[in-house]
Image (spheres, rainbow, N blue to C red):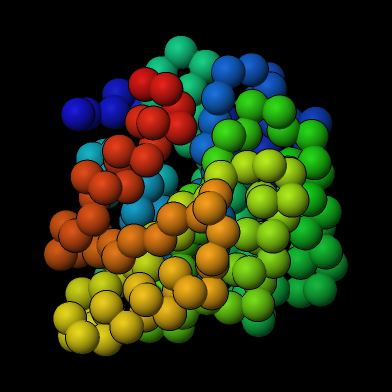
Length: 193
Ligand SMILES: Nc1nc2c(ncn2[C@@H]2O[C@H](COP(=O)(O)OP(=O)(O)OP(=O)(O)O)[C@@H](O)[C@H]2O)c(=O)[nH]1
Ligand SMILES: [Mg+2]
């Protein structure tokens, strides 16, 4: 199925978040993990979520509409060392506020570079989502960079690390077009599209 998707708005502050209506899914992950590329691949709209060349450039919460009161949300990437402490503190506060207030948030798609595996901040994001009763789905991205054996190992290890009924894990590659249908099916189910 083709998702008819359109950019809505960007928020740099909590007061700029779109109206909290309907259902939305947040995409989170380490900077450079392949978040924007994954959103583009899943929605089949290359260039929609800007694929930044400089890690950490997506500093805003970007909202995309995929149906009436149905949204995908591109959250700022974390874990980029060169970001000044003040900026980092602002992101953290914005993300925390977003997770705390957002009633329309139904699930978290966590983007993890399959070569790095699940990091401490990724685990913290999962905890955040689960503690608030949200489902989570992990995309192990850039799987084209691994051998089949390596990718199956990271899949197994990540599933073991995320042993919670509300978490699912899959391999994903925008470049090799692996796992796109599987990811889209999760999104359509969560958004009730
Ligand atoms: N080999 C390979 N590279 C990928 C894949 N997905 C993304 N990349 C590359 O990874 C880099 C980062 O991708 P982005 O989609 O910009 O990552 P991001 O998580 O949105 O990064 P920020 O917005 O800066 O936090 C780019 O150079 C992409 O081309 C993939 O499936 N395979
Ligand atoms: Mg991005």
